[in-house]
Length: 294
Image (tube, rainbow, N blue to C red):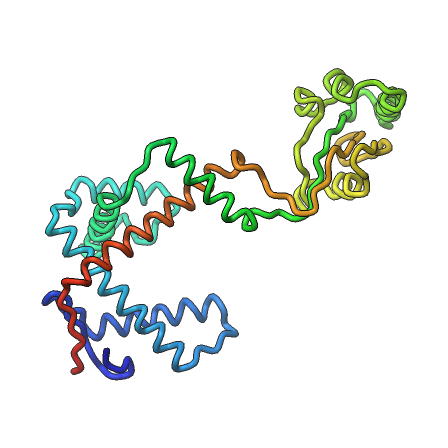
């Protein structure tokens, strides 16, 4: 491969990727990197590496497009127009789609062609196999889901009453419930009977509370409690609480079922990328690629 500093263009199976396009793509990548991290100093060897990445991406794209066209995987006019409509209605609108130019239309057509190639060559699994893959990925990457300290909490919440100007009745009612708990009455039963929080339907259980994601007063209180310990009556901005910590975890990892949907999206992206790399690698084995200085 010629030195990136020199002017050169690339031929992929006879299709010319002009030097100007390579330069523009390279400059755009550098600009994005500098915007992302203005303090970063990109040295000559890093620039060269980035340049080669840009060139390979352009080559890969051309190979996929040619293969897609040869395999009859180019989208119809209706499919491109449907994608334009979808982008108009979504947050992915990167173009002025009220005035679709030939260039934008071609870009979207190319995008759909490549997507069709990947979809056609993806390995597919049945529901059981897919579930097993998700669970395996979850177990292998549990550390990525770590959320830090967490306490499993249940509480009884008594909301301020409109007829209680000084909230004295509300406070006395909550203190009475605390007394009954200390006398040994069942927490879940009293939560179901008195709590104004929807968690009353689950015995007052809120699940795991993480630092930094709930009311600060509530957080400070529950993280001072030991498992099995009841709080005193305490007040937040909406009423009075009694809380009990059921369990403490130093490094909480949410259960598989609670992250499964996000995992599926992550795994779909990985499969897409792996399929793309596999298809491109196979195409490069027979491709005629020339780097021509000029």
